[in-house]
Image (tube, rainbow, N blue to C red; front, side, top):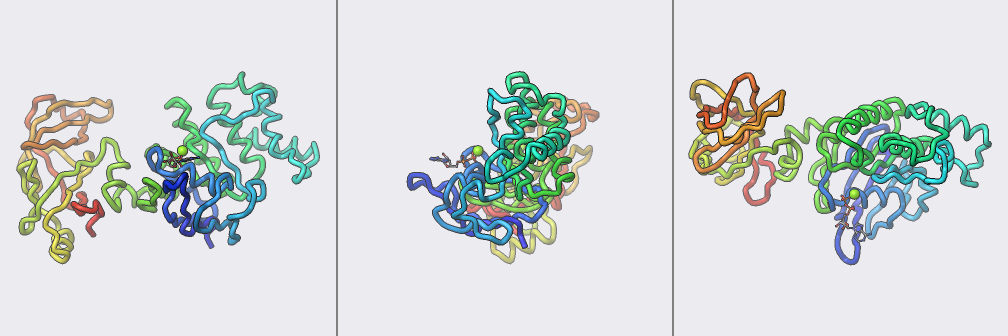
Length: 362
Ligand SMILES: Nc1ncnc2c1ncn2[C@@H]1O[C@H](COP(=O)(O)OP(=O)(O)O)[C@@H](O)[C@H]1O
Ligand SMILES: [Mg+2]
């Protein structure tokens, strides 16, 4: 049984639909990431689960029980917010103890002390317990925020972009710390982010949300390698996937803007013929394009308009025909701006999408 289930959950604000019949199942112990751009409905989803908003339609089911009408305090969920929500006049220790002090919990002072110390140890903030929030760095403050969630030992953790206010380096180390925390605790996490790298590196499964609708649910591998539509394909991956309009001509795709024809594999051929599709969007990720020395079957030739050196790799912005593509190549190739290059694209690594709907053709 899924730990958390959203059944056709719809939420409107002033008649405007923020979430549209959301269907979601999160397994016990899973690290589930909800990924999407600003305004997609990520925070709203978490607030509905936490009980800070009421759904207009649908059910929220936690551990088999419908919790729609429960108060936030009775839901046994803990939420970590994007902005630090520490009490400024309290020490770290007092901030951590605060969620345990509600009358309904009935913990003794000694129990609270023990739980606070355990959480502080887990998050490596034992030495900061007597400090006030103003005496902490951003990363330390967010640790305390996370600490306040874990001390309560809730049934499920909801995290709303908890790392987005940290600098890049700290964000990276906190990513692995949170992943470790999840493994150590073995609890269910629902983690919201607009950052595809966070989603790809931390998630067991990702739900991609756009304009209140789930675009795809899958493992990071599925999301990256089998995107369900052009939204998912372009949202995940940097630089983003190349998408080029193409016409089906026999066993080939005519990429008109590139003035190139490329061959398809047998499976692609078959599905396009079966469905009678003649116009598509052809997608190839920049890292799937390689520079070769001789023209083969799946090749385009083009010139390097400009190059972005990233250290470990070069991003080539290529002019091909009247169109353009991006490719990621090794700096060792020594390719320079203005160079003419021959490109190889493997049919097996390409993605075909319906020109009208943007849905993957499979
Ligand atoms: N309290 C509110 N009142 C009115 N509109 C809201 C409210 N909360 C969220 N929205 C709207 O709902 C949509 C989803 O918002 P949100 O869940 O905050 O998105 P995200 O967290 O993915 O950026 C947005 O269009 C937002 O403007
Ligand atoms: Mg948000």
